[in-house]
Image (cartoon, rainbow, N blue to C red):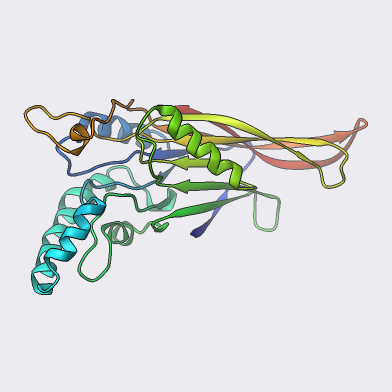
Length: 289
């Protein structure tokens, strides 16, 4: 588990977007170039857009092939290292240029491992390499919590927004499976504002709500919490070829991607018609693009 803090300078009525980037599967013959272009255009057109990567940016390897690769090169470390050089060159020449088309490192919240990544002979992963080259935070290979500190100015009011993110497991059946898994995760965590997941390629975004009692027991507080699952940049079938998605009979998934719209606002809290304080709030809305 990693906890990543980001301090974000803001002002009243300032907007910020968070794009949950889909499972990219760069390198797959099923990669959807047009969908990638559409997403790049969207991010590039939003000056306040931040990106969050939830894993599977590249298509190779899967867990089974990582084990086979390690076994195959068990007594041939030199051959393993030579193959690493070829793969790193592919990342440098094919993947990183795709990322640089739209990625602003200062506006990237981080990148998680997924199921698809390459582990090199020295133990480094392709995700760690990409994060290092792109100068973006590496969020680990499990779950991560992002803490976004929205600050009006140094020493003045701030508002904390917390995002729980994971790549995910399972949920390749009906869309309800992915929704249920994410809602179960939300029940296990307190203080989160958003839960964001990938892996199942099931695109959805919607709010749930929770009740709590105020510290002094004088009011019931209702808090809205957003659940989101991102899709992918690959199709399920390739004409005249068969890959793992077809063999496993994966269903078709919508190519839509969750975006959170955040706006900084000032809320005047009143009791008995007397203003007692001004609160800094972050209004959150969501949509699929």
